[in-house]
Image 1: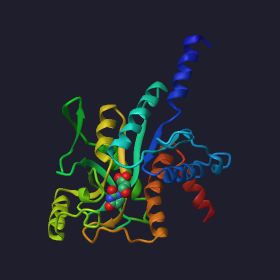
Image 2 (image 1 turned 30 degrees about the vertical axis):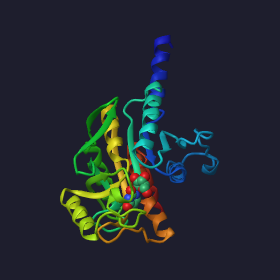
Image 3 (image 1 turned 90 degrees about the vertical axis):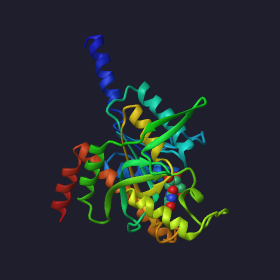
Amino acid sequence: LRADHILLLWLIILSLIFQFVCVGGSPNRMKAFAQFMHKELGLEGDAKDMSDICAGTDRYSMYKVGPVLSISHGMGVPSISIMLHELIKLLHHAKCCDVTIIRIGTSGGLGIEPGSVVITDIAVDSFFKPQFEQVILDNVVVRSTELDQDLANELLKCSREIEDFPTLIGHTMCTDDFYEGQGRLDGALCSFSNEKKLEYLKRAYDAGVRNIEMESTVFAAMCRLCGLKAAVVCVTLLDRLEGDQITASHEVLVEYQRRPQQLISMFIKKHLGLWNQTELLDKELV
Ligand code: R2B
Ligand code: URA
């Protein structure tokens, strides 16, 4: 092998290291996702021994499972934006191209059954605008928050093969606050009536918003600018038109949070050519 061939080989190997990056708020959930993917991809070794690549820092947790990186990003725009800057530099230096990045998270639903999975077409701000405002020096720079529509449609198609829970495509509203910012009346401060709250949430619904969370706008804007194919897939823990508090039991919430993971696992396995094999195996076992 000539030196330039070896170099080319290395670049190909490096670029195959991470094909899929999955991010989500909670370190525990992203560890559970990594362990789940380990099983789903049929990898060798004990998933329980999986170690956090970023142990020793409190910034985020990171697990590598075959071609999948699973990373936690904490709560809110500032937290995920720090992680994304550092992750995107890592992907650049590792010469990873053609990476698909998916945020799997939780959210409050709007007018849909709790436990539904929403695939975001466009992330919108609290004024239902498809944009993210980044203050740079003392300028407000407005960035688009459109996500990859082909990827969203492909994920929806995958979801049609899982009949256990409803999945839909809709706008996702991203806020900087869980309480007043999401029109909740159960925080420490409440400065508006129930009537005003419902009027706002219904306007959001009419604008196409189907769920509310706290990271999608900056995630969509940064991934778009950096050329990463990105998707946001969040389960809804409650219907905000029905109330503010998350009252489902712990067991139900744990099961809800597995739903986006199941969908993404199916998507990844299909891309790796592993889905039909599993299907065949399942059929043979029946
Ligand atoms: C969903 O849940 C968190 C708030 O509880 C936040 O990170 C989000 O986007
Ligand atoms: N996460 C949110 O940001 N809002 C909710 O209502 C539930 C989860």
